[in-house]
Length: 394
Image 1 (cartoon, rainbow, N blue to C red):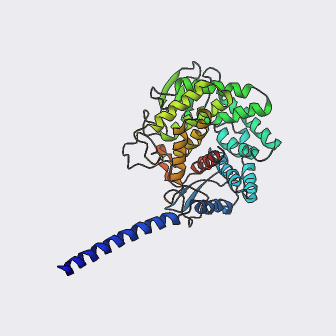
Image 2 (cartoon, rainbow, N blue to C red):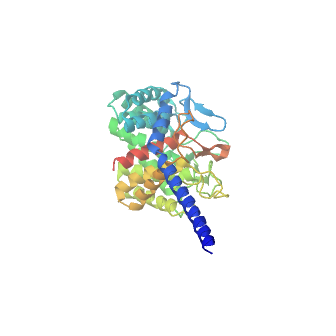
Image 3 (cartoon, rainbow, N blue to C red):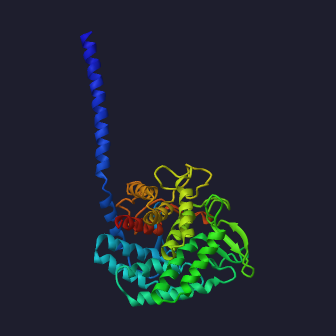
């Protein structure tokens, strides 16, 4: 009997020790992952990427080890220079600043490109970030010229800036929620030039978007098409969401960010209230995962087996830090902290052995083309870095 008892005791002791060993091993593994070191490795991959005016890195296919490279006319071109400026701000390493200046210079010709509304993304994310670090008159002149070009797409009947020039057989005057982001360029152009024209057009565009772009639950449609001669809304549809009535995740981020930013320049309480209302829609959505990293569309049919969109979460996280500054609403800051904590893990930071100029995995791009879904994308990195800097500055 005593021998049986001893065997039983020994068996239980072994099980306990194995369990304890597993727990300690898991704890050790968690401690071994150092996000700061992992980010430093990722940053250095941007430093190693060859400078090429025709090869702005946009996204990366891990399975094919293939970087998607685009020219300056692509709407994403300004983010890479912006990433370098922001990494310089984080690290104080002059090498990033010098690279940022080179990549920023490649975008200057876009100040004449009147075939797109994406002037803010291209020019302000690059030259605007540059101005944060040096009082460069040339940068200021480029921003003002870019604003002059952008407002050529403004229609005084619609009281909006036209977004796209393609799909003319379907749309007469499309305006997308993303376009709110380009208003920062106009607001800043007025501050630089003292010409109020840019500010006034930005306000009119924001007012029209506020009036027409939101549903009763404060989510936003992606695309509104207007009659350019009468000014009325022809249709409310999507281009990148799962369907016309869905809530495309990045679009909700653009709305929160865009109206928070518009409030910064105007102090119009309607803009603040809309940012808060759409933030509530996102933060309280039944399909927002516990970790705060959204699926690419809140209405995607196969949740939880749908791609995440780190870029959408990063845009919201960055916007909510600013919105917290205006409101002191703790839930905004809590979301941003949670998002930043959960993406600074081995699940989302690209492994050190991947030699590509990107930081985070699992952003999602354009569902309409089934392109860049669940991949590293340059604007996911941009708004992640911006959120890091914003939370540090509180």
